[in-house]
Length: 141
Image (cartoon, rainbow, N blue to C red):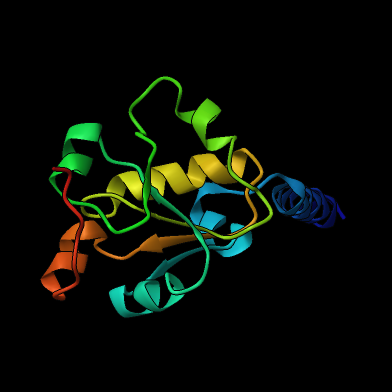
């Protein structure tokens, strides 16, 4: 009887912990799955740019001036006013973002999800991959 009681208490504890975890907010491990952040290839990214999209380069202004994808808006992730600037975008429309290699754009995408953006597309490999695949970049004169 005593063993049965101990087993019951342990089972109750395990199941209640599991239920709590399922009710809790988005976990870091499954953030991309639940929030619609999609990392897409250069080819897919390019095809989407034929539409009227919100295209954001999250690199520094000096990096941006060295070369950027046509029609991109530069909103520097490292600026203290990044969130304020990002808030000017339409949260209901898809946003296409990139950086140099994909790390900063991933951070930016996660921040944008916290701010309520619904759908974010991140360029796999960043502008480095874009150029590697022979795609054109604009340069400030």
